[in-house]
Image (cartoon, rainbow over all chains, first blue to last red):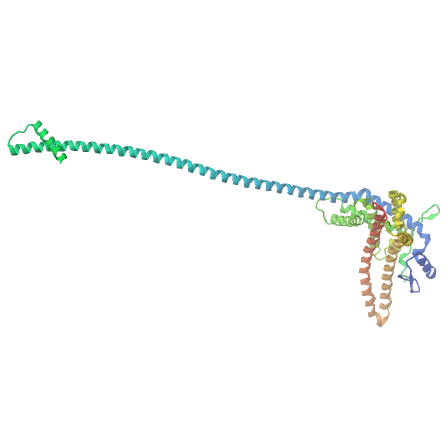
Length: 196
Length: 248
């Protein structure tokens, strides 16, 4: 129910929302320009012209232009997002490869270190053995020298004993003892002392 | 002061064809002005087609997307072939309604001839497209499937009546809203003059003045709302017949 305000009498007429009631209202008030049917052909004719013009302008020209711009922007944004996703994937892959390389390098480094240590150990053992062998050799040589020196020393002792015995014989007996006899006597004396 | 005077059709130029009076009137002028404004607005807004839109382009695209969203939400992607039609209807009705808000301007949509012609066009498109798409199955629109037989005796007449009422409700809603609102503004405006010239009571003229200020705001809302309702109902009526299976 809509209230319209009437012409000269300024009285409100209730108009039902149906064509019939609108017509009835016209009869009582006698002057709604909307119900002057003589203007209908002109109104509808020019409305049709205006509307067809608008429709053609929109359909042929304006909608493709505006819609195209919006579509282009959407495509561009989608492309950019795609690109960003691709770039991110690439970066992730690079990161993964980097991590892998790092782990490989670490493993390799520890492997090399272990290898080096083994080689070093081996060399050390070899060198130690060589050193020991040399030491043994020099020790043996030294022993031999000692033995030689000792036997030499013993020989000297004998000579000294001989000299001392000759000196004693000369001093005590006043004779010059025969070195051969002296030697023999010494030998028997040593044998005797060795036996007793 | 006649509040209905603003709705008078004034002939600017006589023009007769086939015995019909097709004179160029203020209605014709403002209808063409509305079209020119819409075309100028959208044409100017889309002249650059920039990737990053400027102010006018943003407005034009906002307008476009608003209608596109209305079409998509009611008819889906399939109903997009009606987009130019709905866009034309919405743009024309909205611009005409808003033009009517200027003092001394004529409101094209305040005439039942115009709103009736528009609504009959919409209903014609609905019926023609319904028959083209569904053939005689179009009549299933009046007989939704999956009901008990007895109910059809009630439902079918109701559906037919509601279908036939559509063009009338579509036309009268818009025309009556425009006319009533504009007449109301005029009536309150004449109250201001009447009270203002009433000597000691002239201070009371502030009351209709404040009321009219509020009514103008309301009228702007109604100008937009009625254009939206007209376009949205057109979408809904079209979506009834553009569905793959009719009568659900």
